[in-house]
Image (cartoon, helix red, strand yellow):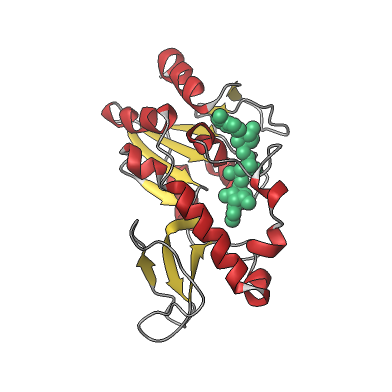
Length: 227
Ligand code: OAD
């Protein structure tokens, strides 16, 4: 079976009703990155940061995977599919994809701020985290999210997985955030690379087939025309 590696970003979940970060009306127009998504923000106002992620989780229960997520799960009938996502939602999982690497963490997990950095699953019945919520060893719990300025622990695994791709598909990412945006350079030279995004993405390496459509329609075109 050929291996397809799919790199997804916020645009993948846009049709489910989760706003992207950098489009007009996106999350970073409503919030400042420096207030909610950096280690400095956590030190300055942890309650605000926790509340921001509690809201993101609440939204997650109000949305469903879209046709694009489902199309990727369906692709597993014909291909080995590895998803590498920058998204912290769980919509790929809920659509039925089997192999998902979360580069920027996961909303439904929290982590101890103690030296062990143990990770714990949240549940739909108990998804909020507040100041004073501690791990069994007594350390405050924080969102299991890779904030700006933090290392991306899964990047080496993602790079290795990308080198194994026979086909690379990039969906719904502005390719502005590194190291994720650099993964494209780990693909074997000459393999087919597709990019699905309704807006124009500039500064792309040569040889990429661009499908300028939203995730659902774009994946339909990809499967019908190219796979
Ligand atoms: P961005 O908000 O930067 O980019 C979203 C991309 O999705 C843009 O290129 C849009 O054109 C595209 N898009 C919009 N609607 C779409 C649709 N229906 N179908 C397909 N694509 C669509 O989001 P990311 O590139 O994912 O990190 O951002 C990368 C990281 O920056 C995120 O993981 C997050 C953010 O700050 C953290 O929070 C750590």
